Amino acid sequence: MSFNPQTHYQNDRIATRYDAERFSSLAGRVFQNVELATLKRAVGYMPAASSLLDVPCGTGRIAVPLTEWGFSVSCADISLEMIQVARDRLGLNGSGCFSRASANALPFADGSFDAVLSMRFLPHFSTEQRREIFPELARVSRRWVLFSNSYSDGWYSARRKVKKWLRHQAPTRFPVSEYELKEELKSGNLREVARFWTWRYVSEEVLVMCEKM
Image (cartoon, rainbow, N blue to C red):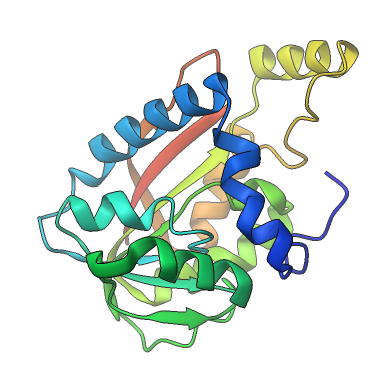
């Protein structure tokens, strides 16, 4: 990945085509269904009707099922273009609010939400940058922080090299090792309570449920 995730999505064309380019194919649809099923298991840790901040909300792809599952969802994203797509998508399902914001500078008071969720975002940033983001996610949460990242160990490292050799889609630029994950959680004073694999050994994506210490 060579683009800047902080600016790349501030474009109408990119925002409106985002979902179609990633999830319209058979493989994309299958992965999305598996990912949402994994997410549903993860949010089962939280009581129904919990208030939840989805950051970055992107096109609302995650916010829609969260509202359908009974959560009170607020959305934040640095891209106004993505926010508009999310607004249109949510429609009458409703959402607590939409805010333009960066994940490392959220415009909310301490403990504003029961939980903060961040999906398919952190792999775009180095471990040093993630250590700046985690404290902010934790700050606005009363209890939980749930996020996804791309995991790296011996198996996944070898798998990434094979994909690169076969010239498949470029792998995530900043996967997280076990050591980095523990150090990053320390930066936000978070404790891991559960781990959910989207598709173990097939996908690098792992969802990590944390509680504030």
